[in-house]
Image 1 (cartoon, rainbow, N blue to C red):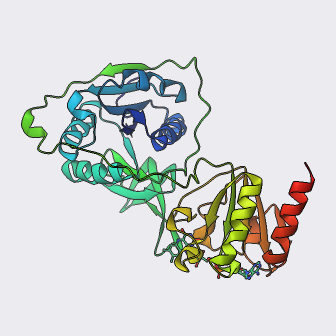
Image 2 (cartoon, rainbow, N blue to C red):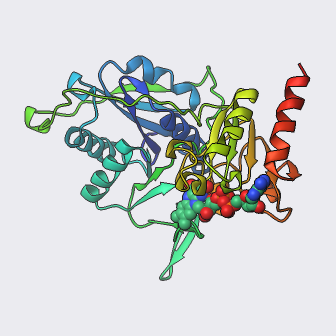
Image 3 (cartoon, rainbow, N blue to C red):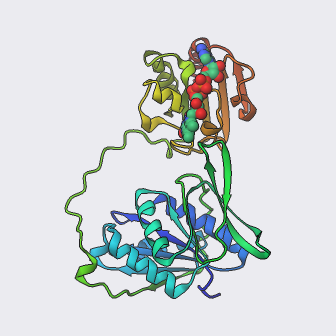
Amino acid sequence: MSSINSVMVFIQQDDGKVADVSVELLSKARDLADQLNVTVTGALMGSGMKEAAEKLIPYGVDEIFVIDDKRLADYTPIPYTKIMIEVIKKTKPQIALYGATTTGRDLGPRVASNLKVGLTADCTSLQIGDYTSRGVDYSNILYQIRPAFGGNIVATIVSPEKKPQMATVREGVMKVGIPNPDYKGEITPFTVDLVDTDFPSTVIKKVKADKLVDLKGSQIIVAGGVGVGSKANFDLILKLAHTLGGEVGASRAAVDAGFVSKEHQVGQTGTTVRPKLYVACGISGSIQHRAGMDESARIIAINTDHEAPIFQIAHYGIVGDLNDVIPKFIKAFRAKD
Ligand SMILES: Cc1cc2nc3c(=O)[nH]c(=O)nc-3n(C[C@H](O)[C@H](O)[C@H](O)COP(=O)(O)OP(=O)(O)OC[C@H]3O[C@@H](n4cnc5c(N)ncnc54)[C@H](O)[C@@H]3O)c2cc1C
């Protein structure tokens, strides 16, 4: 199959490690490409990335264009944009996807404005479908789906007239596929004529803040909302999370109230999570909160209001005061050992 018309993913690497969101996007690209009967391609820029590229083929990737240059080890906008434009012009994908990371949010618009194609930012879902506009029928185009107007509606955006149709996609929303070690794909070195003036900026030093909260990587999350009542009482949530060996999450309202820091926020403007167990304590279950956790494998909700929307998606619901329920929960869990 040809790479022309492919579904392409910009494969982001940071310090030589492929970003999780790129693996998520390659998996989604495979789904979309199967519906369109085309290939999945990737564009990977960096230094010494061939081995990392090979590890991505099992996700159903047919061809990865690797642009290897020591000067590309760190993302800088000018050369990365130049390369992405060249890769797209030469290989003509019909769809190009970027993670909605700092890098993807910088690169995607630069490429879009240069190629004069559309770009939808921060998508939470991608689908293939048909569309008719001013008497013209477009088939098999990309539905770029994202929350809009403060999360109160879900907008489906299309840009059918020009290719590639481009989108940045939020981290954590697309499921990683099961790798198939027998999948056959190619690593193709791709050369772009890069001159010194393409590198007007250089990364001198990187200072990374320690990541103290790992919501995405946690299989158990205990989250607290406004119903917890106070910052001091948030200790109950910490205790339950600690007992279950999980991470602490929170609603935005709990973060805004100062109960806990922003890194703990789950939801549309926080982190999207998909743990094995999500315990929602004193959280009403607004649409914006649910957008970030409703695909959790098991949801337990503790709430005094039996009509709270969180109960609509909870697998187990406990109507009660979290100040009574959580200590009993901890005691029962400890007693089982
Ligand atoms: C653009 C936009 C983006 C947003 N993004 C996010 C986001 O990413 N994440 C997010 O969470 N929100 C987000 N929000 C906010 C969202 O709309 C809600 O305001 C928020 O989720 C509500 O948080 P909450 O459930 O903690 O509070 P509330 O809605 O006030 O609910 C508190 C719940 O606690 C229960 N309760 C009270 N006391 C107790 C008790 N003692 N024991 C047990 N239960 C009790 C109550 O019955 C109630 O159901 C966003 C809003 C907008 C407009």
